[in-house]
Image 1 (cartoon, rainbow, N blue to C red):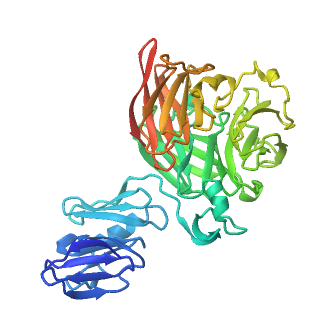
Image 2 (spheres, helix red, strand yellow):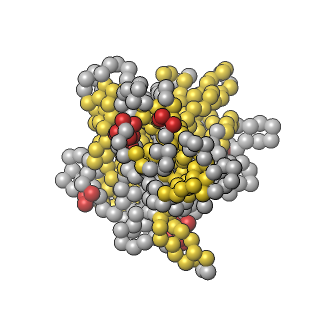
Image 3 (cartoon, helix red, strand yellow):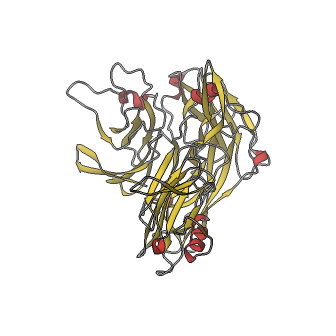
Length: 501
């Protein structure tokens, strides 16, 4: 298959093939002039004009090559040195999908991982820099398994014991690739940062003020959930380093703790961000099934992990504990995969939802189920992410089975509840919302922006209660959108413009 085409120096047509070869044809006669087999170790996605009229090619192998008029490789050129330095800034094993050359600016490269790299022209000078970066689809596993009579290529989910089966991967959402996890630091630090991840196994830290990625780091597996420890860190002072703990749950049943180190050189901006493991890998027991959600307790002593085996695992993550990372209890009672978790402010009770549309309560640290839900009626909750609870009874339209709402989050001011659903909508309700809307009396404001069902939503700190920011993860559209909330009047609220981060 021919994947790319461009003009050579003599006006001939040069095409790149799926086998990594380059072919030059005469335009008038269509005669094959020359061929270069093995020009790339994979499909050639771009053939374009380069510096001095030379030919540039790039492809899936992550290499950029410069060719002479006779399609002979040019091995020494100042631009090639800059390209080598620039590729080192990208994610490991970059797949190049687009490129363009300008003598005034340089070479612009686009990758399969949603990255834009600018390599300055040798005449202009300067160092290569990443203009933009984002999430990508999960790399397809090269193995395939039989499902009935039809072979299916399963998405790679890095299981070490055995290759995944197509049945497992499709049942647990591994096929394709999506942005599934979002987290923001505690609002009292006003850092203006967010962390996202998903099936591409990349942890990305975003500067919300600039809408740009400031750090990307590989994770050991596809990430399903992220959560910051609200008890970690102290007030950030100028020229000091703040360390916040971040928990990540993985699709292969593992989990990890990270320290997000932030330093500030002035009173307004986070200067540098670092992401380092806070727990040895062997200290975080791996579970047999996919982890679906993770939540720190408000006091930072416990980490609750919801699993696809319908169990909630409680781990001791107190920094002063001698058994850091050890499992202390298991919460049984659900009939399906856990989807949402909330803690009370005193860290003694856990609230959970599952795919079986169940709401259950558990005592901590014993893990025993609280049989009477009425006993938890007046408890004060630190978060409100559960979509099946009294505060969210009104978010479901009449006749719906409750499976369409993917995530919920209460605003920092405590007056609003945001949800995302299978219709790709971002919805805004007053908090609490115990009654569904009635014909002619809507109880929500909805906004569209995502091109696929959104999977997560979190609030970020705002300048005041009248200006709050919501982040949403669009799942398979691989977008993280930043929404600005505008209060037009006392009885009217709406979303302002949505921007991608």
